[in-house]
Image 1 (cartoon, rainbow, N blue to C red):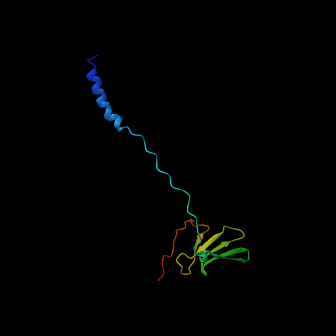
Image 2: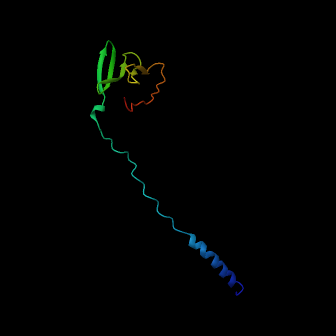
Image 3: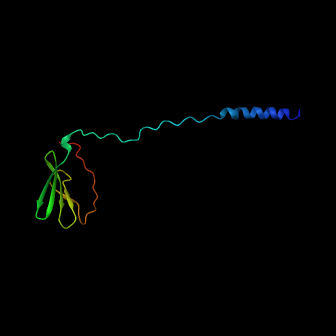
Length: 114
């Protein structure tokens, strides 16, 4: 029995640092609120004005912001609706959604005008 006493003592000395390293895991941080922010209308003039006209059998919708025409949507009685969009703001309209087009809309915003 006395022969094993130094071995038990060495084993206890080796186990002491290992037991000191064991720590209880900390609680995870609180998760922030994941809801999207509330949308507020800053300026009512940004809301587009829509004018609907009937021409023969077609319905034409004109979209204006601050009195400037930027999009025309044409809905034929028989056929696929398509849109004409003024992408540069110079008054020249290009077809956006219609037969034979890719339907890809690239966002273009006017950052500033001089």
